[in-house]
Image (cartoon, rainbow, N blue to C red; front, side, top):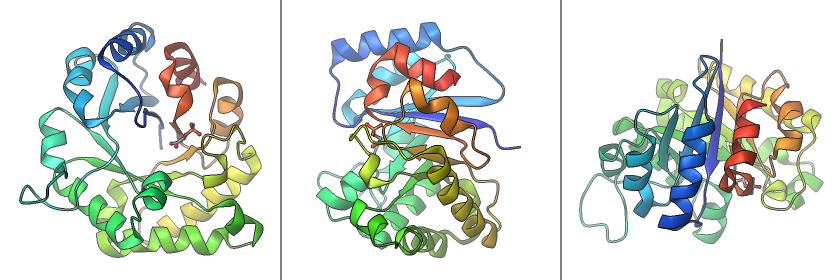
Length: 244
Ligand code: PGA
């Protein structure tokens, strides 16, 4: 049985004081539950702060990107082993903001997922189509292409990832996929996963998830939780989503 997973993606927001308040609110309000896990993916400089506050709590932590390489001469990169050393469990890879703003290719995203697994991290691999691609009727081709690159690189290890469907048109726009739209894509991804023996992988939905829409999205058969951006910066809102 796949449990639920709700992950906060802080993006490039935060500061020591604001994080302290947010993390304290999360620790105070998040009760451990056997059927769901909760995590936050923070900017690299705040990994130590997340570790210090969240250790021993019901909330795991991680990062939002990882180098495709082991430690070496890669200025500006952060190795998976470094994230793991700070207790990180998860790392987001292939977020559309990185694919778009940093030109990350499907091949690079796959290499990052592989590097994450090699260092004991769980990659949360993001896939999703733009509005133009959805309007052109090509979402299946887009998410298959993105997923296939990862499964080709990982093989049987595909079973160890978390997948996140994040339609680009729903990210930070306030426009959420309807539960039926999300379920349609998640069921499609589940079939792709099944072909590689990875049917039990959790598939999260991301894109303007809030407390008001989380329950109806998470009630869908193939939606195993959420990757939450803006709403993860408010403790009460994020906890309400995690409880939905
Ligand atoms: P959003 O972002 O919840 O602010 O739409 C989701 C994400 O980008 O992971």
